[in-house]
Length: 466
Image (tube, rainbow, N blue to C red; front, top):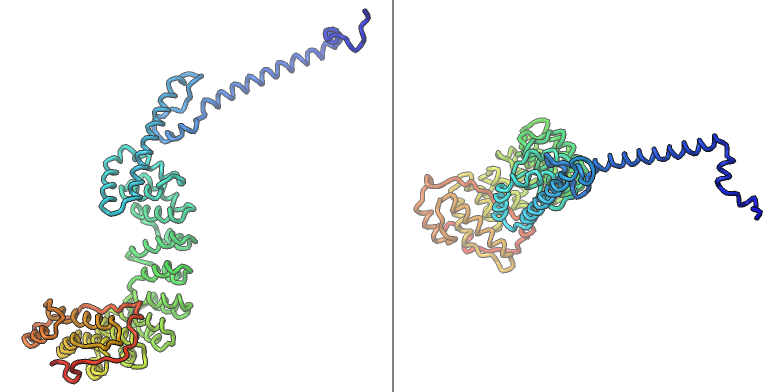
């Protein structure tokens, strides 16, 4: 049977092929086999170095072997040990999470202290686990872990806390900044960097740390008085240190003079925190003539913090006696005179009978602080003052409380608010038996409470001592 040329067997094709082509095919086959062998060896090399995810928890544990079992020398013995270490670490983390959950849910300081003592007893067991947890920024209960590290003073976690302080989470960064401060105080350069941070919690904790410093740099705090956050402005005002006359107080006054209204108010209150040196007193008194009531009240509150008598009390006294002014404003002016120990005796005594009870008790306290024994009779009389039904009940309460506090302090007695009992004491006591009046009146400054009284009456205005 004849065969077609299209059905030529392969053996005949191989026989007819040139010898050089056959050699090329054989060499290519050998090259492919060698490459496959090399790839297999490379895969085995990487497989020996690979650590599966369920063993990564034992990464920081000393003495742990990461060689897998299966193939290779020593593989069969190392895998069970790694699994055992992983299980121990998992149990430690579970125990630690349970403790941290207790810290989060602690309802009182006593419960928190009991948990802290419990943590101290178990610290050798999970100290390394706790440090590893702080390194993990996505771990649960991280804020409680930071607090626990700080309370137990684990200095080995300082580097982890430093990383968190520079992290993206503002709340965790604030906790970490506060924690590192317990171990190694931040420098002024670090605090300046934190104050320029855009995250409010970081700025707040930097101001809190500045408040604890003995030597506070005013140039770090003053710009924060103009911050967009009201919490930051308030804390910056509270962080202002006490100052003497000098360039620092001059710089603060210049800042208050040129600032916007809201910032100006905080700057004025900050001047009060400095103790109001004589250079700042004149600056604050200038605000008493301003039409803005809030700035005037802020200036009076600042002047009340002056540690020495006012150099020029006339503007404050005129304000207190001006019947056109709101009652709460006049009351604050009298409180400034009392708190600073400034007592224009003649002017106050002359105008005492014209003042309503809420102002009269403050004027009497000023005179008692100056050593005027006759003012005690006014305080006793004020215990017996009857306000009209139109007046606020808060007036009656404040008048009685401020008068009774002053009488108890100068007498050293704890008598009730009875005018008769105090008149008996006045008749029997001498000038040498009086104690100095050192307490200060604190007006209720949400003090829209002190509204204008419509009228008042007393039992005996002409002779208050009887």
